[in-house]
Length: 514
Image 1 (tube, rainbow, N blue to C red):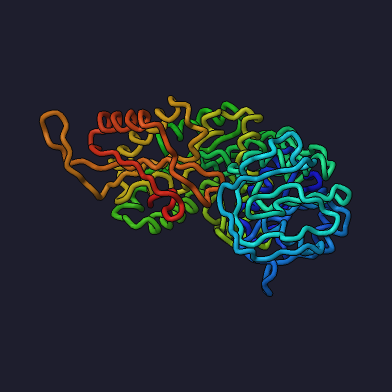
Image 2 (cartoon, rainbow, N blue to C red):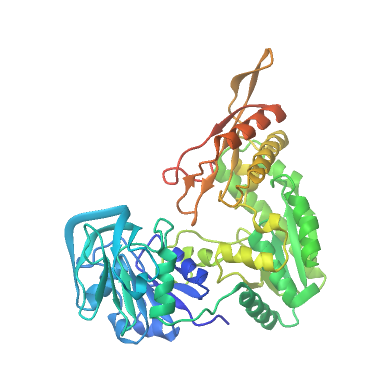
């Protein structure tokens, strides 16, 4: 059972999930809900406080996203951000208008003495993204910050426990954003921390034990952190009544199969069944170059192999439960009860056959990725597994532009292992969010090594930095690190004679090349 939440009311913001994450970083439980919920629906969740998110609209147009203003009369602390700030101001009797003065990006903010900015510099840099502004604060609200273009950039009503800011405190570009959020949560709303890694583990173990009872469960391990942490939690709750199945499709990176077979079992004591299906997947992918076709083939074969493995496990006794590493962003992005846009359909095993009937156990369903990693560390999982960079389900198959062959896989494994090793040696593992290495198998270019010409393949380095995976920028790695990676790859991987660096952001590019 989770503690009472701080609810983020989503007005179509890019950063609604990020706001919830920042609240959790303040050790308070938070969830995202749609602005279409009524005050009754929101209050039924017994929120400790409400945060109104940003959004792309203007409050004064006819079809602008709105919310049930009765919330502001319900004696629940509330905080408005950007569009949410304007919605709050409008609902409380203030005035919002199009001033013709837009602010986007880093902006100089002047603050006044107030509880919201206590202990912070009077002049600070914040991240703005607006063309409208609050031109008149609501009665009872004290204006506590301004910019050159926005006279009402923040206000506070301590008596009613209301506050808001025109800028985005949840993004890292706002210098003191987390401190501002915490001032609202702790000092204005009067909340005390109720969310910790240890609390998550204890609560989930109790919940899983109650759900499974004396039953048995099965979990499909992918090699990634999500399924590993989910399995570790369930194993702690029900012990040897959990069977983990690892389908080795032959498309993982160097050392990852051994990591699951050896390190995961050593850390958890879980019962593991390994299915070596590498040849099956290679045969199915023979001659295929279209990335979407690759994805479909791998998804289909995985389901069949998993189904067969699951049937073997079930034959050994009644198995009623399937463990999945579904995360909170998966739930939100799949439209899971939040009313937000359905960005993707999520299923860890690529979608189960209709006749494979299990009750789902999803112990990570309320967690963000960083929280999953914290839980994994607390459960004693190996650091290499906990901090593994995100990796696509189809594995190296979609990082080969061209046909997936054993030769191409081995080339890419070697290049990828070198890139990862040098990134680790430079201490950059955690500052780079993901580091795809791509083999252009269908391309050859002329090179020279020693006294001879070569005709080898190019490899692409794609280091990216991101917080949400929806947007990303290329990581500015030190030139000497890039140089070392390039030299080692061209020296140690015989068929590769050229290394290039992808410096495209997302958008317009994607993280994976496919």
